[in-house]
Length: 127
Image (cartoon, rainbow, N blue to C red):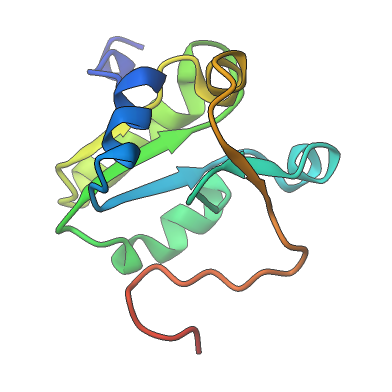
């Protein structure tokens, strides 16, 4: 568990970065079942389960900050994925402190995830 103690980004910091137009990648790590119950994502976020991240980590850009969030206590899932990505050479990755619940409490913008939406991790077209 001590490995999971890492620097978090606060919802206020993330919102400020979004408002400033910083190029970020935000990943929603919640399970599909949870997303079906509440399909709202942080504005600009992509949904990918923990398993999908492990399979597709090579598609995650290394030229921008990666913010991970979930809805579990103490951001455990986000911290685990952050450690995995760091071990795979992705250095600029941080869990969101308080996850989606903290974001909602501040009434920051969310958007609905379209069902069956293709995930495009780069700047190019979705294949």
